[in-house]
Image 1 (cartoon, helix red, strand yellow):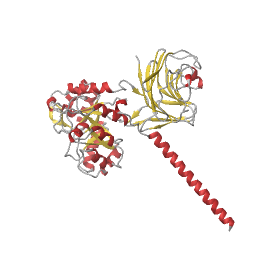
Image 2 (spheres, one colour):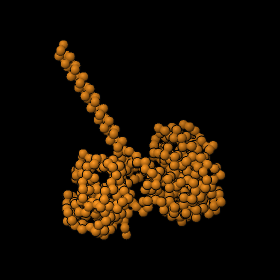
Image 3 (cartoon, rainbow, N blue to C red):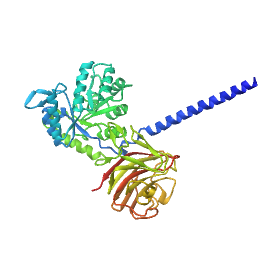
Image 4 (cartoon, one colour):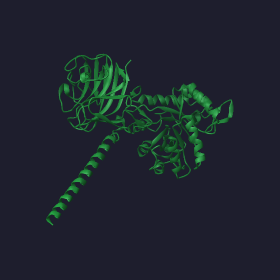
Length: 491
């Protein structure tokens, strides 16, 4: 009897410990996933470094012209992408033919030829309606497939989106639900969110900032509500808020607060296009000057204008394509957020597609602990096949606990930073590193902490005029995180 009780007690303890261990492991795994996938910090919009989001022109902007004439005008604006809408005259010489999903095969080829001639791409199509039948939807999806269109913009009259979801999965083409002003069905973002909740992530919103304003909806608040489900944006700025008679003005000259709209899209890592749809009826004969002014304004407030994001992204997913790893350890990449997390070490995650000479490198990093140790390597001269690269390239150090030439912002083992500008552990920091000739400057969180005429010193025996960029994973106890890796060559 005692033995049975003892066995029962041991079994109970074993199960309790095992269940606790399983629960703890599950919690740790969930916590780690949340840590890597966490959204950007909600910092003031004035502090956001706005990313360059590509423009497309909604052809409705040039509705007084044919589609082929519109292509000329879009090219003259310096924009490379268009959003077609159904019903526009295709060609001035054949006014009865319309640019829509009823085009013949030959006409589709003529459209493709015209696009190639002007160096343009159709990225979206709409606003287009269809019935809740496979035949009606299939015609639109087939047209989009033939044209290489990635997004269909629509405002369904029905509530059952199950067939839409089926078609999205079949064709791998996204659906963006557009909002016209009240009293239309999807005037408010809450309604869009209610209809797409739980559906395939390729079904989302086409955020029309101008129509939100006419309805009395703050565009920034609407974007925040739709976070993670914004597929397309019709960017507009209006002269008034809450007025259905408000008209379009160049970006930055109205009440939309374009800066904060773009800051919010940046924080969300928005991966689509800004479709310019200028609808001012007084400018319908020549909207180009206002469109051009608006684009210039957006360019002026885009921090990363002219930079290349070297952690590549396609169709909203980040990839480590073009990067290699030398040595122990590795980096985990969250494909949605573009956040890298180091595991183990000591190794080097280096960008192999190009060697850089003179450049400005900007990136965000975050330390999990005070003694997190990592670094950013500059001008690694050759493909790493041994640890010898550490003697022939400079490392901009990341380690808040160290001092002098081993502290965050130092040219490791060579030149110390002049001040400590790091944020508290667990917060994102921003490096801006300029390396031109032998002149090296480092800014940390907007403060210049290093301005140095580089020379061989400490462990660095010599350095090259040109080389690769690399990120260090140092150990398994205190991971480091990286995101937003941008570079601009200095010519």
